[in-house]
Amino acid sequence: MEKNIDLKKIEQKAYHESVRDGLAEIFWGITFIAATGYFLIRGFSIFMILLVLVIIPIARKKLKEQYVYPRIGYAKLREDGLKEIAGILLYMTGVVIVMATAFFLVYDDLTNSDLWLKWSPMFFGAILTGAYLDICRRSGNRWYYGIAVLALVSGVTLSVLEFASLKTSIIVYLPFMGTVLILTGSVLFRRFLKNNPVREETSDDI
Image (tube, rainbow, N blue to C red; front, side):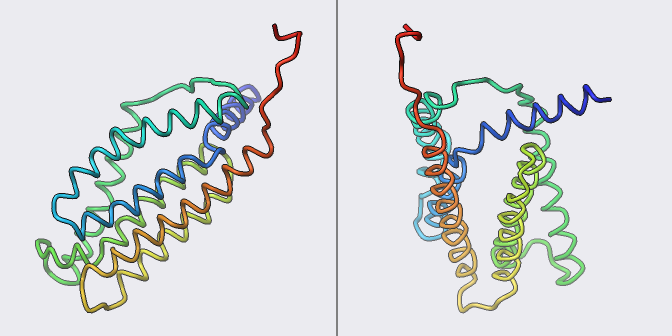
């Protein structure tokens, strides 16, 4: 039993090391802000695909190689790729089912696109909340609960409020949470650089 507990702590510490640089928050924030363009600019989805699948992975890798690995080294964590993807898809499906059930019970309508647009901040908030609850569980850092709660509360609030345009709620939510994530990530990244200076090479290293 003690070995299992120690193993769990080791896994949490390793995962904590992999996420404490704040780069994930910065790039999630950029993604959220950029996603606003999807609701404002026709054909913007093509850029979003390039951003998420090409630009961000390359930029994140470069920054990791330049600022992170020289400070704490590189260790490849155990990957449960298919299991993790299945979990994400299952969670997202669950959120959609819950929202669809609520629409049916309250509005007796599942196909009204205006309803989905109006409540889209709550959807994104629920997704972000699930992501950060998982990060909190895997890293052992409770402060992630703060982002999880803020994401959901702000999403529900903006969905409930009435605006002149149905797009307003999501257009406000995405930049708001994106800015929160970028600021949070920037603070974490600055702290990471300060607390983990690059080790100077000595004659013993040669």
